[in-house]
Structure formats: structure tokens, C-alpha cells
Length: 308
Image (cartoon, rainbow, N blue to C red; front, side, top):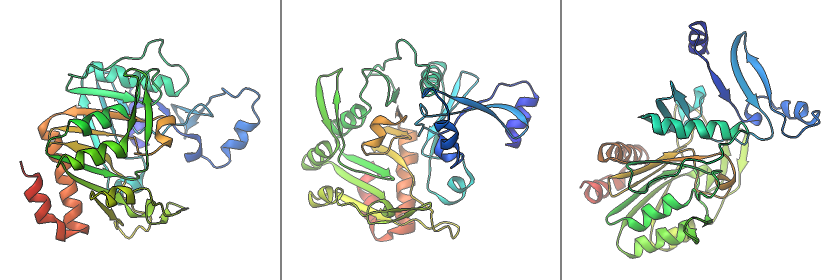
């Protein structure tokens, strides 16, 4: 907040969209009192002019920012102290005006003002951006395409994984996440999946009790490693492995706010795809760090299989 104050004092425009439920548990009552369902309201953050937009159109699960129409950051990390202090999270920064333009379109879409034509991706580009609510775009497609193209390894660290299927109108086909992963495993691709234990074996996340789920066991039954980690940071009982990234062949990385389950198809979520060995290796090393901390008996095998 102090940094926002400084920026505003220098005449820099700051706009923020926040999901209603994360701001004020009583705010829904305010929304229910409004006659128009598309209502979005503004308020001042403390005493300085930062635009806050909240409302029923905002199903925002994204965590990105755009700076000077030229740089973006996105990833798994909510903009709160606990996420930085206690969770395992990632942010990725890209400096490119065309990428920033796409994220500005996502920002306007979340606030209820989508562009007439949403920017499309060139599949040969080294940087691609996908948005769950872009018309005619299937956000599951880049994940499954990357999995189907894998030759040696697939590394995933994700907060939650479930059966996930979606129709892709641009290719007139159905994508199936588990089907793609199991087919890659049968081709001999080495797959490592790190999961947050509380969202799979049952436990608590924040103040919510999460029931155990059996769907990931299908991947384990097929022979795919699924290592469930119960994170522990700074004595926080709600610390979490909150990552949402995948690395293919130590070259292609996909990150953003997208969890690997159905609600991310319909909420506001993004995937940033980067074809860059350096970025991929940084994410690979994060998985190795987690293994060293929580499952050290896998470290030697992981190093042998992924050091190429």
C-alpha cells in the first residue's frame, strides 16, 4: 500500500480489480442490494485514489499486473503477505509491449469490457498468452499440446489437479488432460507431478476444510509419479504448495493462475507459455528444491532424469 501511495503521489494511474469474496465478507450484501447484476463499484483504498473494482462479473482468479503498457508479471502468487511469506509460489516477468497488450485486454475483460476481437496466438511464437474467457479460445489446449509434444520429460507443480476436459472450437476437438498425460507416460516420457497434499488427501486451506479427492489416483495407477507435499513454512498451518506451472523437455514453461481443474475453465484465469531454456531450468530447479526439502529420497533420481 505504501508503494501505491508513492506512485499515486507521482501522478501514476493505478487500477486494481479484486475478487469480491477476498475483500469483504459483507460486500455480497451490498451487491445484493443493487438492482443491476452487472453493477461494479469503486471505492478508495485507504485515503488515496486507487481504483478498486468489485462485483458479480468479477470472478477474478488471476494474479497479474501490467506496468507502463510494456511489462507484465503473472504467476501463482496472490498479492498478500501470507503468499510471499509462507507459500511456495512463482512469478514470471516479461517485458514486451505485445504481451502487455494481451494482458490489458484480459484486464478489461475481467472488468466487463472485453475487446471486440481478442488477440490470437501464433503457435510458433516463443511467448504465448491464453485467457480462459477469450471467445473461441480453449485454455486447456496449450497444456495438452505441450504434453503431446513432449519427448523426454514433463515436470508439473500444481496446487490442484482433477479430471479436466474441454472442447476446442478452433481445432474442433476435445482435449483431455489425464488422457494426454497417460499417453505421454506410455510413450516413455518421464513425468513428475508435485501436488499440494491438503487439496488431495483432505485438509485445510485457509479457513476451509477440503475433502479428500481420488481422481489423481488414476494417474498414479497408470504409473505416473504424483508426490503430495504438505508444505510447512514459518509455522503457518495454512502454508501451501500453490504453484501452477509445467515444464516440458526443459524448454517450454507454462505458468499463470490456471489450476488444473474444471473451475479454472470458467473463472478468469491465464496461462503464460514461454519457450526458453533458462526459464524452464529455473522452474525445474524449483521442483528439485521442493524435493530436497520434502522428499529427499527422490532427489538423485530426479537429477539423473532431468539433467539434460
